Image 1 (tube, helix red, strand yellow):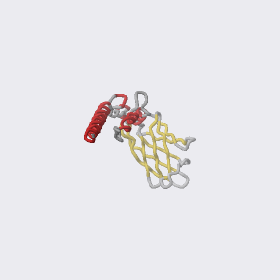
Image 2 (image 1 turned 90 degrees about the horizontal axis):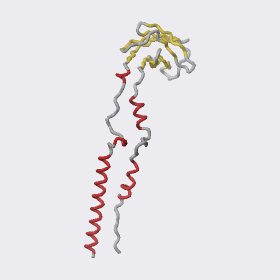
Image 3 (image 1 turned 180 degrees about the vertical axis):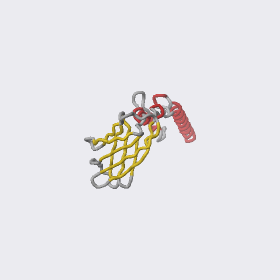
Image 4 (image 1 turned 45 degrees about the horizontal axis):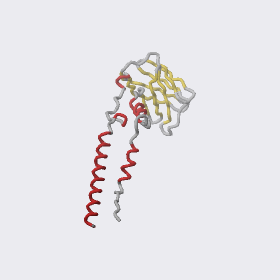
Length: 184
């Protein structure tokens, strides 16, 4: 009885095509790329042995988070005063435990030295740092040049794999036919 034995790897090739998603099935890659490539608001980070102050420039001011440096616990009952670009700003405590420092004048593009005076019931501290304000165009990151499956960038790889698979199938079938001739 002549029996053709297929190689063990052949079923893997037949189901391997399932890994390629078609149009409309990006599984969030484009959304993730848009998130990574979107411009970030300018950030401010200042720390000392007592406090850590982190801020983000948002529209009319800075949104600030003040933490105890040792425990990383939020400090919600402090008096926070900022000096930036010639403006003295008293930050107001927000309901969520953060602070908001409203700017009298918007900041133009450039780098600004920032000084923060922190006063709590037990301690006081002076923090310094820099805020680098970018234009939106300068913050934009160009998307990666890698092509997605919907852009047909995978086609040469698929064609190469199909060619290799067909060559292996032909080789296996010829070898089996040759062995059957030798046995007969």
